[in-house]
Image (cartoon, rainbow, N blue to C red; front, side, top):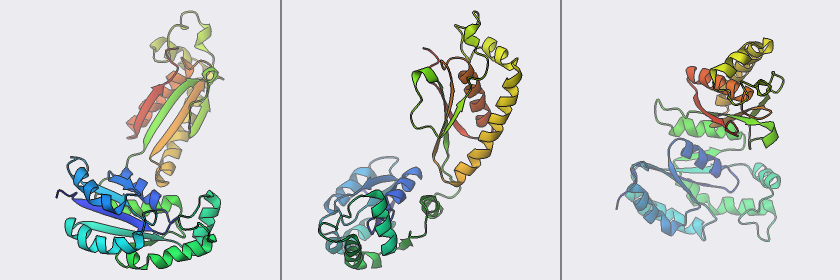
Length: 288
């Protein structure tokens, strides 16, 4: 049977953060699958082993699989550890009180709750998974972890030496009259600047054209505003990196999304690229 070079199996108590560990491994280049039935693990490993870029694999398995607590321990010892020598089993847990609070906040049902109060369901799962936990290479108690701290811990343990995840900064320029872009992290309104639309020679052009750029550069507020914008964004980006943010979306809007926002967004994108950031620039309404 073909097998991946490196396998991480994520399990543990419901609500302990398994999905966050999976998403972090995906950010690190792992090929991951959530809630995989035990009988499908071997076919899955054989399938992904044929993929050139799937040498590092992550699987989430837990009590959502029928009879998981009784079937998995022997399957792990007799099959997985023999098939994939480089396998790591992570067991995530948290205190009863923290798990109960997380379920209360999300309003999701515990997989074992059915007719049980939430604390009894948590304690029942904890007792059932005692043997699974004993097999783990790593036990993480996430009670005191924020989402960002958990992500940082996984990256520290499983990131390749010398390789860091790169935050993608997307700059979207747009026209307010065509609605806001979806899911912005930062939004800047530049409609206070004089509008080139009212200059006949500039109306058909865009913020990518030298004539429009020169017109804006001649406005008294333009350079002052851009300097403050650049300083503000470059101050924030390292702070977002500390929070392990993989994607940051910046919206810059003017009335029609054709002149002012485009010129500023393009300039900001180029300056951020020069500082080493991974930048994507999208001029959503430029051609309207």
